[in-house]
Length: 406
Image (cartoon, rainbow, N blue to C red; front, side, top):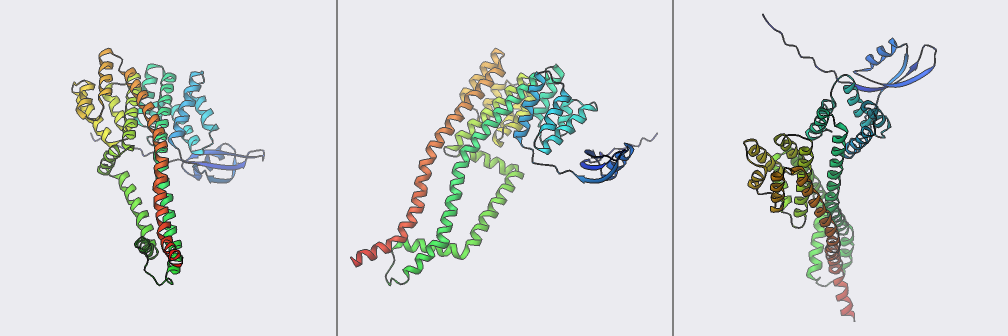
């Protein structure tokens, strides 16, 4: 007996906006998800609609992690209020200002309506719902406490979102100042210094060394400005392109990030806070430790901690305690190890991990505030030295000429 295996390829569907007239001649319009315009036309014809116009709906805006966090909180709030799941999807999806989010939620709702579990419906969209999200939803469905798990998940995502925002704000200020300083320096070198150079050509005297040095740098900028800007732009593009696609590059950069002066300690604390918060949330939801560590590794946000978590997972799976496995990685401070040890012995690991996350989140808050107050005067000194140095260098010949005339 020969068995022929056949695989059904899922047809890709799109959203279409249509306009037409019903049997009475009244103008109507709507939106339909289908594989193509022919399907839309034939479906509407069967409903007695004469189609006059069909256009493919634009996807709308980009779906961000903030959108998913807000959706999770809205869904948790409505389910805790007793709103049925499908109705909650309708309320959130149809009322969302971002068409892409609305379309995503309507797709998930359609899958649930056809018999799929909510966790499996989320799993079909891995770009927006990671394994941690899907595992927690699955645990909530299995235990009949989906509203509580969604509330916990929403809180988790809000805290992670907040700590990411703090790290970005800490790094954004100095980076933006460096960019502005470079642009100002380039403008001075390309347009201002050459004007001074023409003025100094009629002096008929030797120029001071600082002035000559600044003028030489200016000549280089004027001659090769296209190479400087092109090289910096191309270098940044290649750097970020490689960073996103190379695991080795990510490992090197993440390890360097942890060793940066001032910023490295903030990044380390933020990573430990995110790691502890994720494991606490997963463990409290009843997800087995080995399986939970798999999601924690992906949520760590740092390649060094990702690899450390994978090593911890391997050790735990063969019978090691969590604290011993963490100690072997040498990436966790003694305080974290002591609290995890107490949590394991007392059977309150999720509570201890949550307290660790709270502690390090507070540490990140304090560190970011301290950085902000420290960076402002430091950047002012650097900018003053750079811009002021160029100005003084170009005015030195004028001062000398004044002294001679005097």
